[in-house]
Structure formats: C-alpha cells, structure tokens
Image: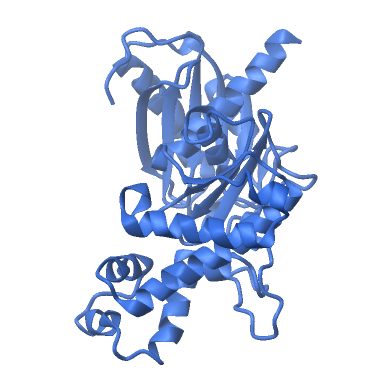
Length: 340
C-alpha cells in the first residue's frame, strides 16, 4: 500500500477478526488507507496468542508508514457473532472454538492502551461502505454481504443498528419463504434468505436443479473434476447455460424479496451488495442483469413511494471494508467524546 505523504491526523486503527485471518489497517481522519496487513487467526487456540501479536504488528505498520503511535486516537474492532457489544464479549462464534466468551474489547484496549470501539464484523463492513465506499453520499444505507453465508449491516446517520441484544442487522435470517418445503438455513431454521442467496444456498439449489437438467454444462464440468460452486454457476451463466442463468435470476428474486422487507422497515436511501457472490459485478452484463432482477422484484413488492426511490448497487471496498469500517466507527466515537 503506497504511503500517504500527508495523512490527516488523528489516525485510527481498524482490526477485523475473522475465522481465518486477522486484518489490521491504519486509516487517517479522512478515511485514507495508510497501511495494511493480515495474519492467521489461529481460531482453535486461545485468543491471547493472537492479541499478543497485534501491538507489534500495529507498531510495525506505523513505522513502515513513517507514523507514530501517539497519533493514533482510537481503535475499532470487528468480530463475528454472536457477541455482547455492551460488555465487549465475543461469545460463541461457530468457526472460532478457542475464542468463546472472551472479553476481547477490553483485552485489546489493554494491549494497545487505546480506547476500543467494538462491533459485529458485518456491521463494521457496512460502516466502511457508508463512510468512504458506495454509500458515502447517503445518510442511511443497508449493506448485504453475499458469501458463504449472508450477512449485512444497517447504518443510519452514523449509527450502526446493533439491536438490544447485539443481534441487529442479521439480514441473512430474514424469512422469505414460509412454505412447508422451505429450504433449511445453516442456523437450523427454515426459509431464511441465507438458505437461498448465499454461495452455499446457490450450490444447494443447483444440485437439486441439475437432477432435472442433465443437459446443463455444469454437469460436464463437475464430472471433469471442477467442484460445483457459485463461481461455476456464474461462469456457466456468462457462457449462456440456461440452468445457470435461471439460478442467477432466482437468486436475484430471493434477494429482491429480502430487500422489499427491509425497505418497508428501514426505508434506507440505498442498498449495497458486497461479498464474493456478485456474478461479475457492475462491469459485466450478467452482474448488471443480476442487479436489475433484484430491483424489479423488490419494486414489485413495495409501496409505490418506496419503489420509486429504491437504489441497489455493488460495494466498492471489497476485503478492506471490515477494518476500514471498524476504524471509522472508532473515529465516530472519538469525535463524540471529544465534543462532549
């Protein structure tokens, strides 16, 4: 990452803890990304070992960028749920067995000797897009992240909607199908958006559909050793495979249903789609068609006054969104305390 010759002080550190890696970035007061690195989380071991690495890593990032620790005003921390934001606890993340019921916020604050703002990782990513990404021109927005699961965040006037029990903005668990044959979500409940629109959900739907469509090129690719995946669906759709195109269209329909619910409850200025499942994104005809399908279904199900103003676009920050958003949330808290 190139050095910024004149960063705007103060600086903020963003820490994005995932099941595989911990991402750390230094961000200035304007949201400029000054330095970044990542290292393995070691999710099956005690969190203390990973936290012991964070301070020297932050110091190294600052040194390499010609910056000082005293210029850092605060730290933002994003972790996967479930969590207790008020008490600063990471509770029982399913893919981090060694980190259960750990007071991670206070442990990080002690390690870095800085105030720490604690957030759900998806909400932090939403704040990143809100601050300097696709949502920067809006006062309210909803981020929907499409990956192995479906996550997201809701930001309204600089505030993340975390909920009374730190489980706000769980967009993947909106119920879009109440039928007896509704697909079962990885959480164990049926009919949730994640069961239909995540990469996992797309693969499950593709497996079922392929039984009735032996003519699909995806069967040949799978037989030749390529694993069935959301990426294969996307590539096959780009090549004109009719079943793959149908799966993309259905995914757009399911997302449109979820967005229609959120539009009536939240009424944000924009919906932003992040994550790896973008079917080529805005630069491809398939990606643009995917957005059009989402918007069409959402508008079909919403009040005219809401439908008229619906906006859906792709995210911009990609994998940087989590640590940038965590840093941005720390900045917001710092500014509040400074003006109090």
